[in-house]
Length: 404
Image (cartoon, rainbow, N blue to C red; front, side, top):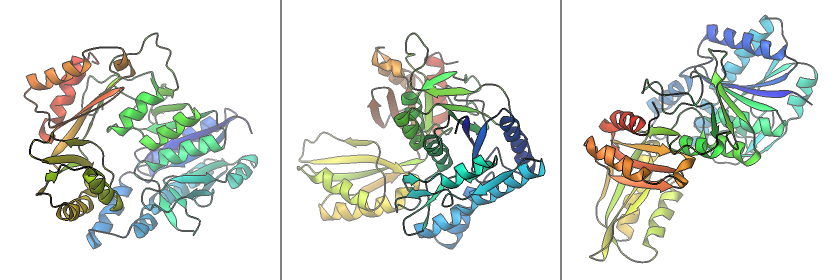
């Protein structure tokens, strides 16, 4: 089947009935260009946050299976309403849940991974000339339990469907006009990027850019699925995420990201012995917490401090696991700090440009911003700083690397 386009509309695009009607008209206009359309939708506006808050009014530790049951309802509401809006405007549409379109996942509730997709019912509806609306962010296990794909999971639904349906493009509609050098809501001088590589976008998404879910970029990169990120409130071209850009040379720094959704844990006086770090992080992994940046001090007394970052939402269980393992290995106190931010610079040109790290550290020092932890990759440098300096750090780095 030719000319299949997968479109994804985020929560801000379908935040209320008026916006749903606008999106419906836009979808119908695309359909009239002789395209087969599969549309993935997120929950309305802040529905996901509201559902999460309801759960936490009952318990601070809601069962993950029940959270999936609850959280998946938001996308079902928006998909049904959008299908109704399209039908009202004279076009035929049908809405499906993730389970109805055969999105099978593993059993990792709240952060499930897609294993297979059976597109039979989607293809049948497309052959009947219907616009297919799919509730994003969700799937189903082999035991018929509903799962969700983690925050931003509707992006993953869209990219996975684009791959399975061999779509010619996956369009991600959001409330900004594309990918910017940094968050335009925080820095007015941010500039829209015309093209960005999968590699750079994956790094930016992993380090805090909110435009797309990192896992969706991983899938797009693996299967070379072109993504067009654009605004649902404008008809202008957005940003193409592609395998290679048409730039003659890589730009040293492509963008700046910041992320204040992490917390730092420090285990003091850890015995400096082979295998101790493995014991610590095995226990934290078993608790279901993802560890990111890790720093271990150089030992001079046969004991060392180990610091690492975890998502704030995992802090409670990570702390519990850290205290238990610290006691087991006869380490010292376990400290934590949830008042931190990660500021990062990203650019594939870092491989061939010298002095990028020095420039970053120098400008932060000039602005009296202390660096607590440092992490690097081939195309990024990240610094953990106090949260109160986050906005200033992004602003001065954006100016230093001439992204204005």
